[in-house]
Length: 328
Image (cartoon, rainbow, N blue to C red; front, side, top):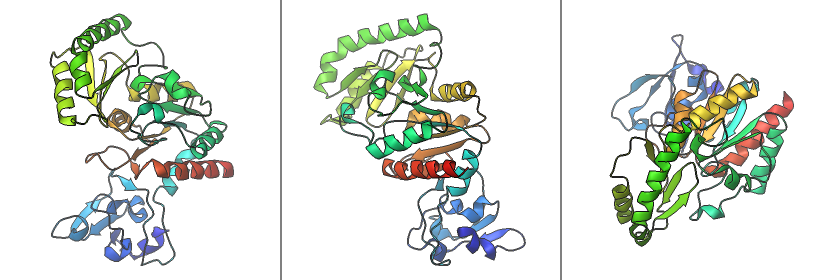
């Protein structure tokens, strides 16, 4: 592990990190601070070349993103540290709720949402985890839609970005009124939306305006913006990966859902993995002892503790979790 390299730390707890410590995978700035040496509370002096800056800077370990990817260390030949190993084991010892987004996290994003599904390996590992700990799928899809795509039965499924599957939707009457008004606007602009290549998905508790398949995405966004021009304070609008989502303002979000599921499960903490805008509320409210993981590096200001490069790495993470739990 990289901690063997960190023995060079001086008495003041300062570890000097240079390019040779990272080999050829030189992550910039905040990823550099993810080295296990820094996770142990050391201070790092990182060369400016690794921070896209001209001079050395001293940085202290706060809550930065920490790369899960293995970093080849030329200073410690043969060691390939997995920077998530210790925090993952520590969290699993607390017997947490295991909560996962679906699209872009457990399953890759696909051009047509109906084509999304879990691989057999991911499904089998999740089923194994569900026999050991409470597992929740927390998705923007409807509950019925995602259930058919899992291949196993988790303890909890929360749909519509948190609005479906956990308790009663707040202020139900206001929510119904807001959705009814928005459906009328959708009907009026339906020809323009179709012409721009926008697909409307009505999930009852929320609406999704997909434009991934549009041949003129800029025009599609213009039409969607026009649809939303009448600012309805009863609605909450947020983007995603070639989609614009519309939910009632009073509806719970994913953060509300995960916190509720922690209480229902009788556990003290949660592990949550997600990849998109609607997952950021969970990252933002994560309490002490929680472990949050973002899939992908497309957000310049992510709030999660760690990241995976892509959904392809989720199977490895799940297998490691199964292995760690089996040894406890």
